[in-house]
Structures are given as structure tokens and as C-alpha cells.
Amino acid sequence: MCDASLWDGIRADLRAAGWISVDVDLTVDSSIHAMAARALSNTEGPVVPIGFSMGGIVAIEMARQVPERIAGIALLDTNPGADLPERAAARPRQQDRVRGGELEAIVRDELKPVYLAAANRNNFALKSHLLSMAARLGDAVFVRQSEALRTRADNWPVLAGIACPALVACGAEDSLCPPEWHERIAASLPNAVLRVVERSGHMLPLERPDALRETIGELLSRVHTETES
Image (cartoon, rainbow, N blue to C red; front, side, top):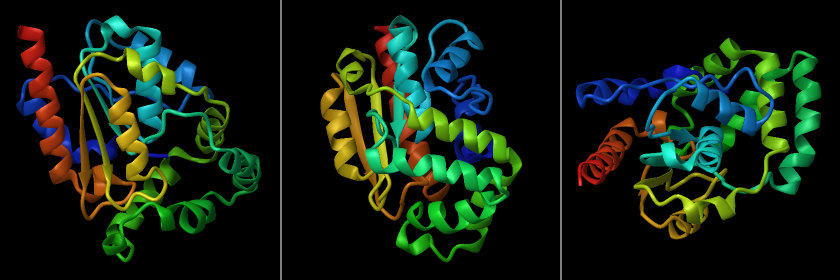
């Protein structure tokens, strides 16, 4: 339930470095497979997927579908596995509540409290941004994305075949996708750098865009070096 404004903190740096950024539309489809296929069909040539949370799941699926096009990959606060049983069981209830007009309550009461680092939980502007993104996307998008997460495949085995430069990053206080998951992700990738960012929870692109700019810059430098060599 994040829109393109999630990346406002790093977009200018990408342009300044000469990279073309493309915002992938993850609002239309109700499966991770279809989201990845749409992303690939809307771009040409080598790509560097930068995927946050569900976007990271899509990025891994992109690498599974067309590994030869993936020049680098950034996996941020994410989970390559199938949906956890307790989360999969809760999603239909949440979907029904959203269909009944409770989107704001779901985001405010069930999602936001576990998204942010302790220092950011009273940040009114940040919490308002999260609510605004969800409100702009709306009920139908929530249901489609929730269903995509519920039915996703276990892509842990895919990681070993992603040989390109990889960045694995997460907030040190991410309780939704904790750092130990990212240690395992980085260990499963042949060419990965792990960054655990202090003073950030799950919402790394919004909580610490400064740190994210630096880590993404490091990844793109590695991609450029390997492409030129």
C-alpha cells in the first residue's frame, strides 16, 4: 500500500547519477507472478530492481522469470518465503474488513504500529504519509495486494541463482521482516552486501532515506563496475 512517493528520497540521486528510474505498477494484479511479468514487460534490456517489502518479493520473482535481464538487485525489508501461516490466516479477515470500509482502521491500528522504529512512532508527518498512500490506493488495491501476498510461492531457492551484485538492507528495528531474515537472504545470494540501518523500522525508504541513498549508490557503483569489466 505504498505509491511512488515512497521513493522521493532517492529519486533525484538516481537521476543525478545517470540512471533511469521506472516506477512499477503493483496495484493492478493479484499475484506476485503477474506483478513481476508486468514490470518486465514495461521495461527493456538490463534492469536493477529495487524492491521494498512486497516489491522485494516481486524483484525476486523477476529474477526467477528472466534472470539474464537482472544486472543488479536491491532487496529491502522483505521476505523471499511463502506467507507465514499466521499472516495468511489473517489476510481474508482483513480483506473482508477493508471491503466493509475499514481500510483506514486496518492501516492505522494493525499495520502502522509494527512498521516504525521506536523513535518514529510519534512522528505525525510520517504516519500521515503512510495513511495518505494507503488512502490514495484504496480498498481494491489492498485486497489485490493482500491476496498476492497470501498466495505467493516460496522463492528462497531462487536466491542461489541470482549471481549479480545484490544489496540486502533493512531497518535494525524492523519487526515485520527482522534483520535475522536479511542475514539469511544475504548469505543465500552469491554476491550480496548486507546493510542493517539503525534508527529505522520496516519503512526504511521513509525513515532513513539518507542511509538508503548511500547504500543504493554503492550497489549501482558495483553494477557499473561489473558491467564495464
